[in-house]
Figure 1 (tube, helix red, strand yellow):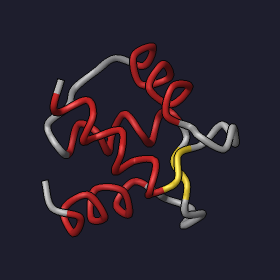
Figure 2 (cartoon, helix red, strand yellow):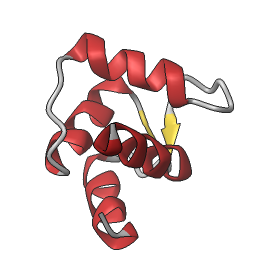
Figure 3 (cartoon, one colour):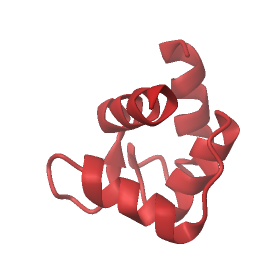
Length: 72
């Protein structure tokens, strides 16, 4: 998946334009790129790939998450 497609999905659900997604926004953004999961699964991904421990996912973390989940 191209970075532009990922940015579009990320930006669409970053409702408050904070540059970060909470687990609910993350779930919606992941669905947009074809990765459907429940709330518990999206929270688990956030916990796993939130490198800075902010409790929210920045775009760089989102890119890594999508690539890793998509590949395996």
